[in-house]
Image (cartoon, rainbow, N blue to C red; front, side):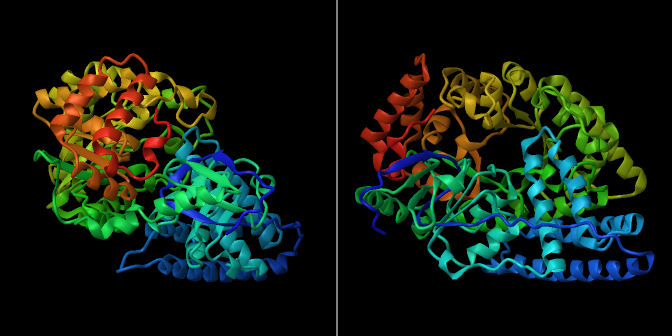
Length: 592
C-alpha cells in the first residue's frame, strides 16, 4: 500500500455512519443505467407479459430471501426486518399488482410499466419533509432493481478485486451491502446516505466502516487510489503518507470489535467509585438487540416505531403493529423496550404530497398523533396488546409541555377501554416523554410530575435549542453539542427527573460518544441509550472513570462561556487523567 510520491495527502470531511477504520485501494462502483423503451403490445400479448412479470417477481423474492441469510452469524440475520419489507413489496398483491395493472391499462411491456410505477412510488416518497423517510426511497429502488434485473437478466455480481478494497459509490442499496460484505471490503464511502438509512444500519450491523456525504466521488477518486476511511470522526484520507497509514493501522487494531473479548458483556458496568450506569441500545430489529445484549446492553432504550412505515400513505394495521411490537418485546425480555410512537409527518397518515415551509416545526410527532386521534389510538392499542406479560413502555416524541402528556393519557385510557370491551387482554406500559424542544426543558419539572420517565433526545435537543439543522452542512458550525446552553439544559432535565424520583435516559449521539459520556455522568445521567457499535467503547470508558471526578469536572465547565472554552477544559482534563481510556486519536480532533 505505497502511495505515489507525487500525490500529496488530502483529507476530506465526511459523515461517519458506521464506526471503524478501513484502509485500502479505492474500487469505484459505477452506477448502472439502463435504457428502457416503451413497447406497445397487443391485447393478446398482455397475458404473456403478466406471466413474465410474476415469474420475475418470484425469482427476485427467492434471491432476496437468500441474500437476507448471507450475513447470518450465530442465528442472527443482519437486516432481517429491512428485507422483510422488500419481500412484501415483491409479493403478488403489492408492486407486481400495480405493475400488472399498468400493463393491462396501457398495453405496454413489463419493463416500461415497472419503470413508470416505480417513478410514482419514488416521487411520493421523496416528497416527504422527513429525511429518514426520504432515505427509505432507496429500499423501494432496491426492490425495483431486483425485479428489473430478473426481467432483463442482469443480476449484480461482486468482483473478486473488491476484497480488502474501499468501495466508493454514489449510493449503495441495502441488499448490495450484504452482497458486498461477502467480499470483505475494508470500508465503504458514498455520496448519499445518512445515519438512519437502511444502508448505514446494515453497514453497522455487518461491521463495515462507512462514511458518506462525499461529493463527486467519480471525480474525487480514481480506482486504485489508496485511502483511509475514519468511521469514528467522519474523514477520508486520500493518498495518505506512510506515517498516516501507520497511525490509523494502530487505531484499527484498537476498534471495539477487536477489544470485545476484553469486556465482559454480561457484567454490570460501574464507575470506579461504584456508581451503576445502565447501558441500553437504540435498535430497529430484534436480532440487533440480541447481539447488543452480548455486548452489555440491558434494555432497548429507544425503538423508533416509524421504522414500520414502509412509504407514504402506508401505515401498518393494528394487528401488524402488534406483531412487530411483540417481536421487539420478546427480544428484549425482562430488560424491557421503550417504543416511541410515530415520529412522522402528516403526509404519512394521509398520503398527501405536502410541502410545509418548515416540516421540522410542523404537524408531526405527538402533535400529529393528537390531531389524528383514531390513528394514535390504534397504535396505543397495539402497544397495549403487545405488553401482556412483557415489559413495554411508551415514549411520546417532541413533547412541548404538560398538556401533551395529559391528552395522551386520556387517549391511552380510551384505548384500554376499547380492548376491555372487546375482551382483548392488555398490559400496563409506563408513559414517558421525549425531551427535545426548549419548552419541554423549561417545563421539565412539571412534565416529570406527569410522566413515568423521561428520555433526553440529544440530537434534536441541540438542533432546536440552537436553531441549527443537524442535516444542513451550511450551519454545521452552529450545531454545537458542547454549547453552554445545551449542557445547562441537559442538567436541568436530569435534575427534574431526579427531583420527581423517575428514571431519565439520555439517547442520541452524545450517549454513545466517549468524549461526551463523562459530562453526562457528571450531570447525573445514569441511563445511556446508544447504537450497538458504541457499547463496547462506552463500557470500557465508564469502568475507568470516577463519577465524583466527573461531577467536579462538570462544575468546572459550567462557568464556560463558549464551546471552545468547554472543549479545551474537557480535553485537558481527559489527557491528564483518563487519556488511556479513549480510542487513539479521539482527543486530537475537534468536538463541538
